[in-house]
Image (cartoon, rainbow, N blue to C red; front, top):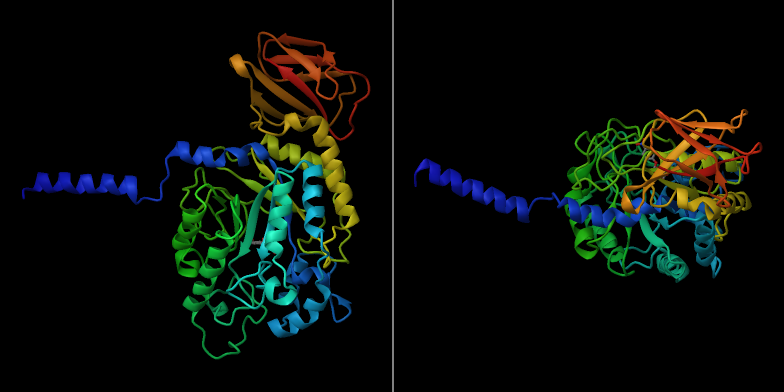
Length: 464
Ligand code: JFZ
């Protein structure tokens, strides 16, 4: 065979590979998969497991007043037996706890719920054949099933948080990472040697059940990797994601099976930086406890955040965010094109702390009036104005609707919007009352009522 002919054959083989065996997915297919998620804008995160009953207390003493109490086993350095003996008697889910969560999410205006099927402590909320450290063995219940059914009944999308870090499994080789947490870190393996591939068999088995036994799963929210232990080495990530995708072709996954520059990570911090994200690493990035300063055009992102400072329930954490902060965060995130995944940490019986119920309901009340300015909107076309934030929607016929979320009501009654348009029609979203709007060069001026109707955020719809 001459050289040019073999070159053509290689090129043809490469093209075939690009179509058949590359992880690269056609853009239209990806967009279609992401559509509901991009429109949803607001989800409820739930951290709940054995740690919830301990409530941040160990041997009668508070472990801390702030920070993640779902890490309590690691914080006190307990092995699984000691931890489980203390925690299991305090983990007593009421019969209808899941219905309460789903109703709350719905009332808050959330479109999806992501909950911990297994956190770092390794306790599975499912009734799984792969482990005895699960709700099936301990409570004779399948809590994953109960939660999925309750969410579906409220018309909510459902996502599984799943920790690949596992403090319980006796083959999990925690010495392979200096950066990932483990209660026994620095100590020798209690069982002598470990074989990480046996842990991976378990992980694949458990995840395989999760994506097979509960009908459609909308999100898989992996957690998490370190620069020194990640991806294929740590979790056989390519194969793990493939297993999930085979069973759930429409599922959306985050990029936390990786912690590398190619996968969109800058450091051990949680701020993504990539201009684009290859879907083989995941579909979205997960800024944690912070909102990116500007959006991330070209990358789907979701800020996850606590209502106080812990993910798992703590009776010692009273640093609750105000309704104003929460509602403005949701608006700020939508104005930058992201999603807000806001966490509740139910107690050991599955009940939600009163403060969290009140916060979620306050967001819901605002969303009931102003949801149109959040759901299915796009990032603001203009930089953050001093008076608040902007979201936008494309209307039929080429018109555009801007939603002006006013945080700081102008004292002179004039709101200026730095956009140029030939015509401008302004209304108060809450009651449809029209406001006087004058379009000048590069600027629209809207005359406002003297008092702001909503001190947290009043929305004005501006059609241009
Ligand atoms: C992780 C968990 O450890 C935590 O308990 C909670 O579930 C949260 C949503 O996710 O938290 C992390 C993960 C990674 C980093 C920081 C917190 N990190 O690498 O900076």
